[in-house]
Length: 437
Image (cartoon, rainbow, N blue to C red):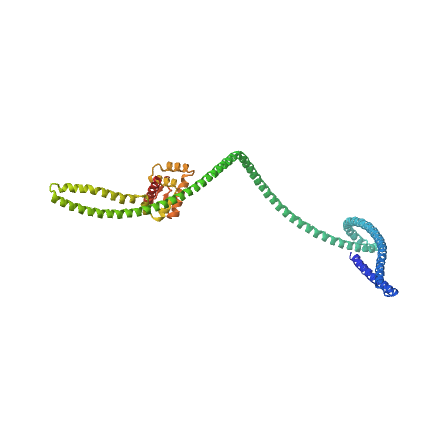
């Protein structure tokens, strides 16, 4: 790849140089022969460049074909070389196999020679006895013994190598035995875990069967819960509507309270006016009494037959209507619900304004302690709520207004704390007075 890229780069550079040279030569010659006509010289130079490039292109194509043919020949020679090398490799493998067979045969021969060495030693003893007769054979045998000793040395070396390999094999065998024992222990542990998993599976199967049995009951319960949720949502909507109506009622009650306060102020003004009128009337009465006394004295002087006691009784009868009028004017307005409202502290007034009508009824039932739970239950059903929620709502309002809880819910029957009974009684009486109005 690098050679081809380098060749292509060199070819491109050569083409560029050839084009420049051709253009320069043609342009110069044409410019000289045409008496310095630049346009014709430029056109001739361009035509020359095109001609040279086409010629070089054709030449390159031919060269490329030759190069491809040469490369194909080289590839074919490489293929032939590879086939020859494969045949050589096959021959080498055959020779290696033959050498292996010869090595095995030599090994067998060496074992046989070991046996022969033992026999030769015995023969050597006998040959020592027969040295005189077999001298020539001794020399020949000595040379053979030397050769055999060399073979024995090689055999001993091979024996040591085999012993070392056997030692390595035994060590590997021991290591494999240890690994085998470890794997056996792991297999036993896995068998125990598999048994435990099978037991868990049986338990899960039994649980699934129980769940399948309980599924219809759970579905029925789910349906009931959904129905209850829908009912609770409808009740929540109703409660929201009730809360909105309650807020409207609270706004109305606040407006009524403002009107009552205004009426109270007007009544106070009227009371002051009446008290002023009564004081004037009392002064006039005193003046009239003085005048009556003077007239009586004059009458006694004129008519002594009229008794003074009778006149006094008449005066007393005339005095009674004034006293009744004063008492009716001065006492009755003081007994209104607004004056009772002024007797309560401000936080209790805020509590009285925040309480709803049915919550005041609940407070009344708890304060009277007569059929408390049935009464509260009836009030809760009428207002689409529950007794505990009503009591908690009252305690929350009291916590917000006075900072304390007013109803004790620890026992079965709720009770009002002793220190708050008087104020709660006042709140109940005031609410009843407002309702009666």
